[in-house]
Image (tube, rainbow, N blue to C red; front, side, top):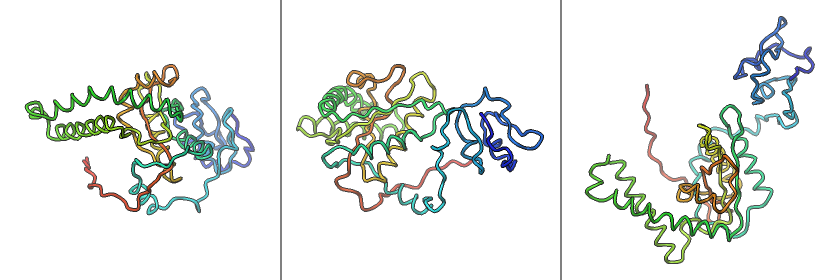
Length: 284
């Protein structure tokens, strides 16, 4: 940890204010000094904040800290429209995602935040169609038990003992699972919709933030994919069975699958946003 070109430091204090663990403090001249280096989590925030670019943290490569160009910033109107137009995709073109695009999406996922800058997240990309087919068959088979559970919970007398919103959820889940199972009997792929790839997002199972780390990464992946004409769909049917997935792909030791996406180039892009109710907000 060093401050290069100390004579260039403005003593603005931005790096000190930014540090989450009070690693830095001002010396007699107002220049930052590393007073508690043992606390550093190498988040790089001080390096990114410094207007002079004179802070270096251990092995963090400064060349990877790209300058932010205000001219390329997304406007609020663009962001609002982008998010309103982001939809799940169930119609894919044949052919795999290019290596260039896939690398860009995984880099975007890696850029997602993690608790304490742990970077504890991992990705499993499945493009082998035989493996995807085996996972599809196993998930559909396992889902039959959930269908009968939702069927019972959505009918009298059990539904009358549940809150209205919960009972409504079970009704929707019942028909979701019914359609999944029935379509498989008819030879249709209502699970993955013939997507060319599955992407699994993993986090450390014992880490209280492991699931959050994985799902933040999945969100980044989806947003980046949408900007490149790549469709994705969160597959809750499959992510409900992490131990089943571990039979077909090698999940790293200590890790667990928390999110599953289907992914591929969109066949029929949306041309309009979709209506959403106003948010329910509790102000305190």
